[in-house]
Length: 239
Image 1: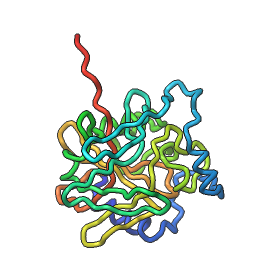
Image 2 (image 1 turned 90 degrees about the vertical axis):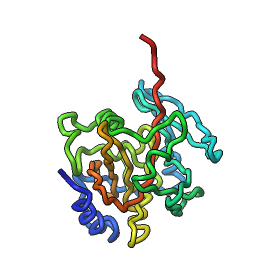
Image 3 (image 1 turned 135 degrees about the horizontal axis):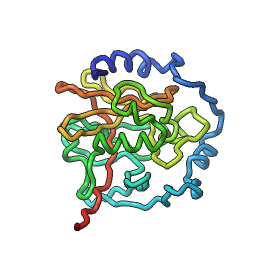
C-alpha cells in the first residue's frame, strides 16, 4: 500500500520542484491555447452525453458562498472546492482566480460540508473514477492508476488538450499546505480527501503531466492541508 510518507517524498521531489520531470504515463498533446480560449473550451458542451446535466447552483447558507454543481452519473458534486473557513484552515490565493481557496486538514472534514452534503466517500471517488475510465479491477490499488485525470482538469490551468474537464469537475492546481513548510505545489498539483466505510481517511491526487489519479492512505499524523469537494446526500426512498 502506498503510504502518505512515501507519497510525499515523491510529491516534494516532483511537484514542488516545478514538475520539470516528464513523468506522464502516456504522451500528452501539449496545448498553446490562450487562457480566454481555454475557458471557452472548458465550458460544458457535452449535451450529446446521456449523463450530462446542465449545471445548477447551490448557496451555502453558512457564509452565502455560491457554487455551481454538476451531476456526474448518479451523484451531484460541487463543481468548485468548498470555501468555508474553519478554525485552523488555510486560505491561499491561486493565480488567475478571483476567490481564495481554503485548504483543510483531515480533522476538519467532518465539519466542512454544509447540511445535506458530505465529504466524498472512498466509494464516491471509486465510482467517479470508474465512470471516467479507470479499470474496475485496479480501483482499490494505491498509487497512480489509470489515465483519466484529464477529464477532471479545468482547461485553463493544466497543459492538456484532449477530453479535458469533460464533465465540468473543474479541478484546479491548488497545491497543498504542509505544516512547517507552507504552501507548496501551486500550479502543479492538487489533492482531495475521501473517507471509507471504516472511517479511514484517503486522498486522491492529480498532478501536472501525469494522466492518472493517485490514491493514498492518510496516516494518523497527517499534517497536510488540501482543498475539499462535497457530494450531495442522496434522498432516502421508502420501500
